[in-house]
Length: 509
Image (cartoon, helix red, strand yellow):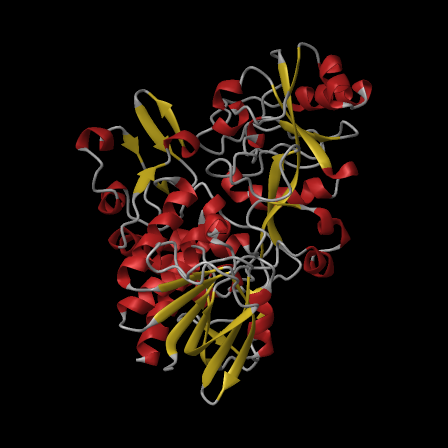
């Protein structure tokens, strides 16, 4: 049997973009997804679909949302987000540690990637609910993030799977790839086959006939694109690289991201780079399940409105600057701060001044919330010492400075005379009934990865490309370190996936 040109390992946004791009270059492509069909899509399936990209303003955004009417456009106030700003943001939020070449390429290519996704039938819409404030009949967008995929992450990956099948990508589900063996200029891709999983795609006419599946299956390929995620779902690797407290952390997304691709890339000589002790971790509802909930679209358990209130631990004490920056720039690292608190639990506290501004997830039936007319009563329901909690709130309230509250920008309305301070959006907690949402840390993805060039080729320690081996998505190292700007994961996965697939397709042909 002739070798396949390219095997893509993974089934999320990055893998699908790689597979489609390679197939459009004329290569034969097989995609191996570890999950069965009904659990496909990787972490991308669980996202809200927010995707960050550089643009020159609304006219360029309308290129990827041509359905937008002039009437709708007239009510949108959207500042430009040039590639220089995106690049600066990524470098700043990595503490200057990110690979500037990769960052510059990602920022400059991001709009091109969005146009390409549109060509692949992905549809987009403005994020009116969580990224804009309505005032005087206009929607004013903030924080450099304004667009999401229609249907959230589910809509994105379902569209890309359909597109992949349309262009001729062969898809196999229930194939966990554990070994990648060089073989005389080719690669033997060895997979474990989940019991009872059809050998090919969802289509009835291409599925294997009923019967037991083999315990393993091997494919021979000229090139391989590894896009099967980080190690966030692997408890042992979390403990090894992130620390003991992370062993039992809640995982926001798929259970199939076990770090297999990272281990395979390194076994072939790929250089380990980036922040292997770092990860994207958020505040999630204390009642969230251990892995992403497939019963509803998107991540319904996240809790991202903390800049509008205060956050306290089980001792009733504040421990972070809730208003340091827009939540797009702080949410990915504040989960770690919660994990380090007593019991790994914290409480987001709000009063009636801001209830109407809370994100939609706070009003969902799945949200865990305590309500009370007094702070002492609220503390009792939280299981927190009332005196300590009341002292914390009193100290915070006294330190709130003058100035106008404006959630559309960093307003400088601070509580500066308290430790830690609250740098923006500081309002005294004074209008009952008060609300408390218990939250815990949930890991999204790990930051450690392997070195790649701007074509997605995996590099050795000497920064030489390994012929025929590519990586994309969460496996790309040297992009994210201590922090992460919201929406960057999907655009990174799509950009590096597309470029890896294009280069691999041309190289194999």
